[in-house]
Length: 165
Image 1 (spheres, rainbow, N blue to C red):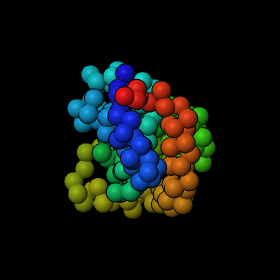
Image 2 (image 1 turned 90 degrees about the vertical axis):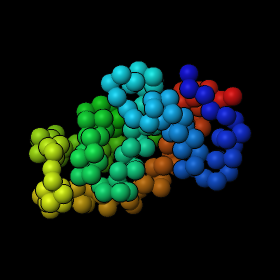
Image 3 (image 1 turned 30 degrees about the vertical axis):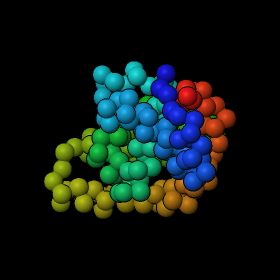
């Protein structure tokens, strides 16, 4: 089981929910050497994968939205795996619904969205897939509340996420 220090967790919790969750994320990233691969996926349990997927999702959404998320290789990890179902079980129902809606766009366009692109082609994907824009706006409207729900779930089910030492 991945371990996190009680003191680090307490200090992070005082700073806020993002910092609290980041303690777990940092432990997971350290465990997998900073990059998720087929070889190291088994080092994390389902709850840990869900939280790590949430981290990748929020990071990519803040940086460049759904197009960037998919272009950076997280499309299948978010949309093909049961991330939306799992995050709903964490209490983030609105986020789950949003991911399902985005998946409805992603799946029929997966080949186009995941293909290697030049910078110009990458930028053109934002125009070609403006349909993601409304979903991104919704995400930013719900992000804080959904994050609070996720943090509360992690706090209430902490043993699923790490051993506290």
